[in-house]
Length: 266
Image (tube, rainbow, N blue to C red; front, top):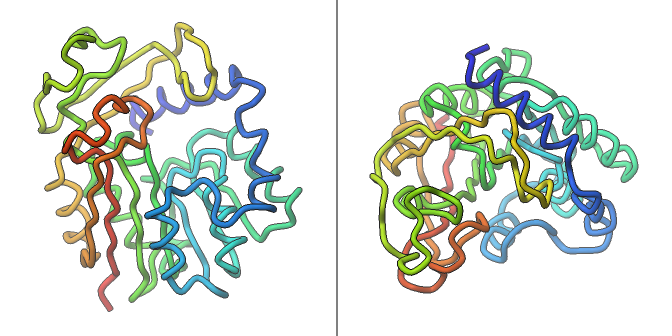
C-alpha cells in the first residue's frame, strides 16, 4: 500500500473514532422515510432516471454507506456493494445495512487493490463528493472502476468542480476573509497535506494524523474515464457548493459542483 494511502487510512479511522455523536445517527430513519435522502436535487433527478430496479450497484469511497443504502432502497436495486479504506466506517455501514435489512455489502479495501472477483459485476456505479481527491493517479483509479463495470453499465459522479481547486477555504494560509472569492491557487494538479482533522465528522478541531489529498483538473477526470473505456455521456455544472468549504461563492457565477455521467463501452 502506498505510504500516503496508508496514512489516509489511519487518519480516517482516527476521525471516525473522534466522530460527533450526531454523525450518522439519522441514516436509518432517513433511508426508511425519505425519497433518495443524502443526494442533492439534481443528483436525485439523475438517479431516478437510471434503470436501477433489480440491478447491482457499486460505490467507490462509500464512507458511512448512507448514499448507497439510499439508492439501493429507493431505486429497488438487487444489491449494493460499497468500498472504503476505513475499517471502522465499513463496520458502521454494515451494521446500519443489517438494521435496515438492506441487501448491501461493505468492503474495507484500498480501491487500487480491488481484485478480479468484482470484474464486470456492476450495472450502475456512483461516486460522490470527496472521493476523487484521495487518489494521486486518476487513470489508475478509473481503470479499477471500469474493470468492475459490466459492458453498458453507467456511472454517475457527483463531485466538487475542479474550479474550486483555485479557491481558498477558511483556515488555509492564503485565505483572506475580505477577498473570499479570489482565486489563489493553480487550477492544475497539486498535493495537499493537513493535520487539522475532519471537522464535518467530528465537529471539533484536533491535531490529527496526516491527510494527503490531490486536486485534479477536469482534463484528468475526463481522460481517466475515457482512457479506460468509459464514454462520457453527460456533464452538468452548478453554481453551488457541496463541500461546505466554499458556500460564500454560491450563486456568484463560479462552477462549484458537477455531475458527470458515463457508460462503459460494450
